[in-house]
Length: 151
Picture 1 (cartoon, one colour):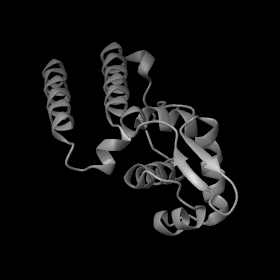
Picture 2 (cartoon, rainbow, N blue to C red):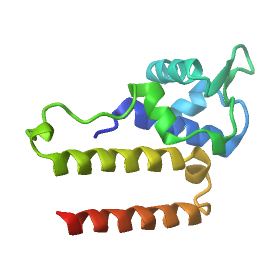
Picture 3 (cartoon, rainbow, N blue to C red):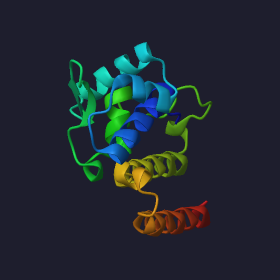
Picture 4 (cartoon, rainbow, N blue to C red):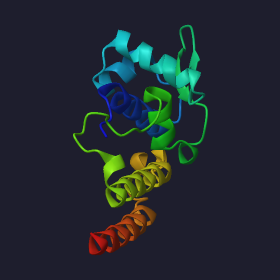
């Protein structure tokens, strides 16, 4: 799985909006996130269509969050920007030929999806809010260790 550059920029934009909690002019967003003005507007259009941000026009225009940062998760952002998480087709692994490999691969994808849903923008915006994430990561590591024992 690879998250494309556009999605990473979208996450940067959302984090900045969450940290500032105001209407942020596009020029300011462009400078802070290191995204060209034109590209920023394209990304913002997708985020707006996904219901994550709103846009104000005019002299006091800019972008703002439409949802609480605790309700915006990385899974949803990837879904809006890329259509979701998938297994690359050209991995060289024939999943259908090996039942255990098939099960492990899809179990890991399920864990990844769950993890991405737990990663909300407020966790990035407020780095001190990481205790729950640490517990979740430890839980996943235990499950992965139990899978390793089966292999």
